[in-house]
Length: 166
Image (cartoon, rainbow, N blue to C red):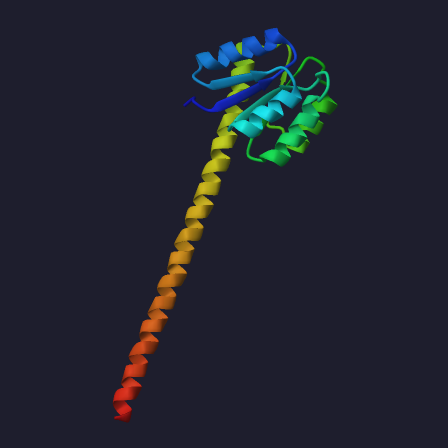
């Protein structure tokens, strides 16, 4: 199921356009930006489910963008694109919490697989939060019901004591 909002950040027009074309065809709502600062402004204005960003960009690189986005909204899942990837960079990125890593040049299938995994994780995180909130509401209602039962019992006991003393 598509429809999620994806922000693509890359300083290369061709990469932004290619990613956008592929993802829009799959039903995603896509916004593109050419640099990290513009991406941060866009993220402050609207909501995004997935960030796809190049690592090597002039100005703010993808790692710094990822860290700043994480502080702004830790629920946004991130996938890195890079033509300069090393195993060390991939491992470091994944350890920091980046969901995926796609090496340039990439195929349509590689991009879609990375996006699918990231979106699936995002959905699972949101569902987990929703279920935890639902559980908390159920527990709160159970506590209130228990308190209500205790109060009713105390009230009944008080009536018995009053009747006995009359």
